[in-house]
Each structure stands twice: as structure tokens, then as C-alpha cells.
Length: 417
Image (spheres, rainbow, N blue to C red):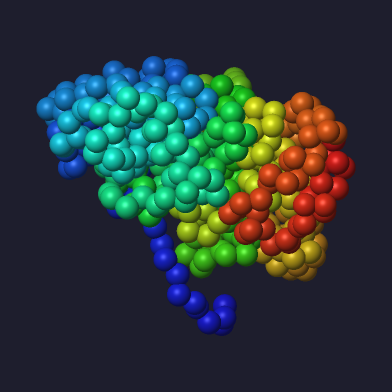
């Protein structure tokens, strides 16, 4: 507690509206930034979450003109972003607010569209090969590929409305974009990409099925843990982890149980609503924590697994989390012990024992959630190990407490086949 504080930055949405029913305030919030809404929705979440009617009613009541401009279907790709931009290149942007309603993939797609709309050449519409040029331009704005261009002009304002409790994309300053053709998954990143407003209404997650709850919830847990032990961890994000992780670890197993208690259905419904709120809040704080501190090995490998095998991001993180924690166990002993005591105040005062208990706790949670234990269950084959080891670097891996060479990482992945 007496360590000297070093300088740090902190990024978060300027306005957060959290709580059941807050989506009804969307029209008022969009009106703070403009009079027209470009809606980016999930493939099914906009309807399944029950949000569609309330969202459009709220926007209409506030006099906001609305238009659906893109719909996500899985994690956003370079081509998906370029196609959306081509369709919007001739549109008037005056007073436009991009409203993202969906999971992390939808929100990332919206952030990329909002950023690139104001950062592409003014004469792009006159180019005969416009969509090809936009494809290249998107790549050039991603980390580690292309020309390394940065976001120079403020994106269109983004209002993010998550319908899952996991990625925390409503509070991050990046958009993760993949390119199956070029075999990469990279981030477009800028402090200016943080959404202007995050509307976190836990009721919108009520329609999520158990597999979505498990994958998104464990993504949230992974982000909280990795941002806490990250080599670049900052004090303010760490305090957010201490507040939110215990709630998430209590709520997630209960949400995975299908039936309400038979003796009191009303109490069961109330309890599930409270658990949804706890997990949605944890997801929001995990986004703030990761964007200000960083991540680690589980996320570094998850990106490569997504490209190599099409593994959903949350599932990939959950598969890698126990192994990543075991690798980092010695270097992160005091931090793991701190987290165990936050979850269980009666935990051992001995750091080694408490750290071991925390690693075991997370491994048990992954089993309860039905997470695959072997990489082969995701479709990984021995001939893919070299590629996975070489392509699991990037920002996330640099934050891991234990730095692994590609050969060491390959050995770890081989042991998990």
C-alpha cells in the first residue's frame, strides 16, 4: 500500500446509465449528441432481447430519425466494415449518432464504422474501386498490419447498448476486427473510440441462452483477472476488479441454472434479475479495467484460436483461462491471493494457499460452465500448433505476467491438445 504511484491515463465513457429499464432513456441520451441515429444491431439480439420496440419508441418520442445501417453476424470482419462504409460513404453525417445494440461483436462493428466514417478520404465516393480501397483502409488502421494509420479525427458519437454481459465493449477504446482471408484478428484502437454513452440495462440479457451466458460471463471473468495481474495494471482499474469480480463469481453459476426455485417462483425471478445486474455490472467494469490496464495470455491465444478454428471469443478465453492462471501462478501469487480473499473473506492468510484456492476456484467454475478442457475439442490439430504459437502475440500477450517464447507457448498448447 506504500508503493509510489506512477503516472497513468484513465479512459471511460463520459456517461454511463446502469440499471433495469434504462434502455427506455435511449432517445434522451441520443439527443444529447445529435438528431439522427444510425442503428447497428446484432443478428438476433435486437429482437430477441426485447429491446427493439422500446428502443425505437424511445427514439421516436425524442424526435430522433432512425435508420438501421448494419447488422452483425458473428465477429466483425474487415470486409463487413468495408461493405458498411461503402453503403454510407455518400450519406450526410450531420447530427448522426451511431447506436449499437447487441453483444461485443455488434458494438465493435459500430465503433469501427463510427471511426472510419470520419477518417476516410473525402473523395472516396468518386473512386471506381471504392470498396477495395475501403478494405485496404480498414486494414491500415488496425494494429500490427497494414500501414499503421491512426484515428486522427473524432469518430461519430457512439451510444452502446449491450445485450450480453461479457465483453465490456461498451466501455473500451478499441474494436476487434478479424480477416479470415489474411488470417488475423487485430484491434482498431484510439482513446476517441470510447463510446460517448453506455446504456447498461441488465434486463436486455434475460433472453441469453445458457451457452451465451457461459461464454460471455467467462470472458468477463477472464478480463477481470487478467487486467488485475497484467504487467501494466493500474491502481484504479484494479480497484474496480476487487469490487466486481466477487459479484460475478457468485452470479454466473446461478444464472447457468435453468429453473427458478419451485417453492417461490417470484423470489427466483427476483434473484435472477439481481444476478443479471451483477454480471452486467461486472462486464462493464471489466471493459473499463482492460482498456486501462491490459490483458494476458488467455486473450492472446483466444484471438489466434478464433482465426484458426473459428472458436467464439468467449469460449476460447474460457478454455485458456485455467492454463494461463497455472502458468502465471508463481508470478501472480500475491495478486491471486488478494482476489481469493475478496471472494472469500475467510480465505487463508497464507498467500500460497489462498492463491492455490483461487486457481482451483476458477477451474471449477469453468467445469460447471461446461467449458471444453482440451484444445482438440475446439478442432485444434497438431499441425496448427506452430501457427498458433507464432500468432498469439500482440498487446494482450505483452501484458502477461510471465513472458513466454513461441517455443514455450507451443509446448503449453501441445499439452492442452
